[in-house]
Image (cartoon, rainbow, N blue to C red; front, side, top):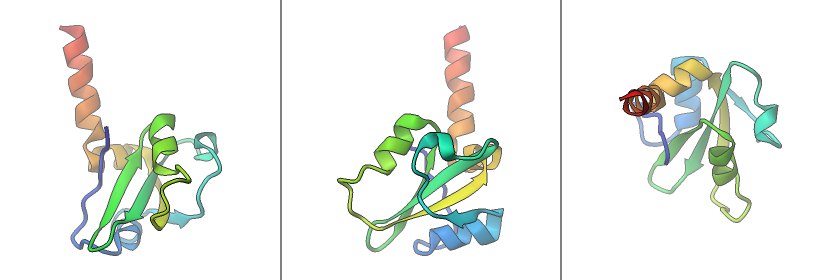
Amino acid sequence: MGFYIQVPHHLGKAEQIRDLYGGEIVERPASYQEIPEGKGLVVVVLVGPWDAAGFCYNEDEFLAFTDTRDTRPKRYVLLDRVKAAHLSGYTHWEETMREVQES
């Protein structure tokens, strides 16, 4: 589906997430299970004139963002999972889906 974190500038999003929100730029985790508990992984894809900072909220998203067939340059940022979910809009989507299922 895709949930993305917006920051003030189109380029350098990994550094902006680090500086603005306390993220930690790391090497690519080998698997989704390597993401520390309580942390969310943000994959910053360098698209050209802008960066896209996608929140890997589950293993399927992790696999999509780390597919080796996608050769675009990427940076990886660990961020507090609650903060990443909130900043990307995932929290709102998850709450909405819960409400729909309960109705």
